[in-house]
Image 1 (cartoon, rainbow, N blue to C red):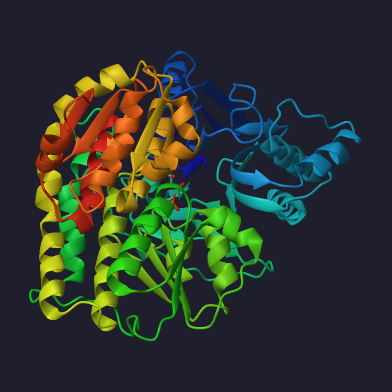
Image 2: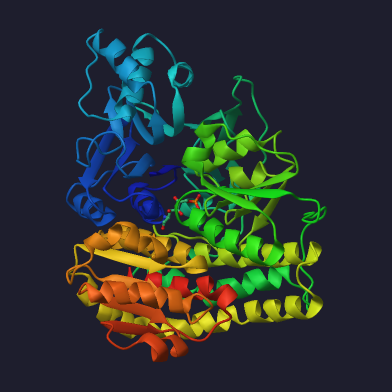
Length: 582
Ligand code: M6R
């Protein structure tokens, strides 16, 4: 994923674009660049690595102009390098792009046969060359963009800037979101509303296949058939404090710390004072549901895996969980009385959206659990349930994961109630325990110091294993994902009982093993697996509660002691140490 921004402003735009790119750095950070048009002259600056490098470059080589586009990149085609960094330029056209142009090789060969050879390894430069080719054939910028878009297969959010055009950007969306922001004599385009938050709160979301000709006077939007389309602007509420670091070193730290507040917001949204679960009408009929099919990617898919335990154990509802990138191509049959549920923080993950579209017309109901309420996944669902985590800007999903779990936990409880699997007292008890979560998560943030000390030592390891059993197995998966993504340390997760079926061969004193095990009904079994690890010289970090530490803390390398929590909801609490260690 990459982040893109465009501004037609009344002042110099490079500093504003840089600020907006900082709010999109969660989408990619291996290179960045800005192009502007200044008195008709197109120019650009690009730098490797984080935005600070681009910022330094701009100090030495300023980029004047009141019209510009910018990009922060996560490499897909072509290694991270200045040559492959966006904006790409061909003659009179500069382009930034998020997505993948699937037919770029054919196009590149076709253009090369005409002597139009590209410098970079990217699919995006091909787009720029093609648009410039149409310009050279006498097309207007709008015609050149439209003809170019008609040739592209794949997914894109694209922004074009043209030499000689100080008051024009062309934006296009297919498969990747794009928001147009309306200012006072200024116009903005961004990958999401967060990027534009301090600049404007009046946003128009482009729909699938739309392209827009944007000038300072407004945006003329065309739909996928090329017809003029009326896409109303909406006011989006994004509090400016939600999109700055608020004194934390990075967004991930801020978002980890925000979890108690965010969980409280979600509880307040879904529960009335008497504990009744509030869903928008017509709600969900779990009593007649035969199966729940849950689909997501990455961390969101681990939230689904935890929820599978909940729905099956407390509501007796069969659940399938699949990663969207597999599900969408497998053409799975969807049996009658199946509800399909999609979980996504952004609501724009291409594979999850494609899986949702596959289920439309096949499943009884399409439900989503999303953070971004205006997202494609939310809009295309029959019922979209917000998780109320607030903007998640850090690359790693943290507060979105815990809020996804909370909403899924509430749904599982509601399913159990409707299916008559929990009597009133058990239901009230489970709900009460869930209400304790914000306080417990707050308390658990207190392990920050020991976690930091342990992390210093873990940082030396080349490989780390995570173990968990039952509801804690998906947490082990999440811990390993966080570590890979944030610390670049190789980590794998296993269901504790699987260790002896091969992976135990990896264990020696150089491979720390992190065991996530509250003192629950499966604790003793996990401890046996832990003993097997220690018998092979493995260094165990045990993450458990007081009872667990008392029962099994001897002989382990380190113990992190978590607050006591109802075992059912332990996965929500144990997300915190996984995040802090990473
Ligand atoms: O926006 P989504 O929840 O659909 O994103 C899915 C995954 O890409 C995401 O959870 C990813 O795994 C996280 N960045 C991991 O921390």
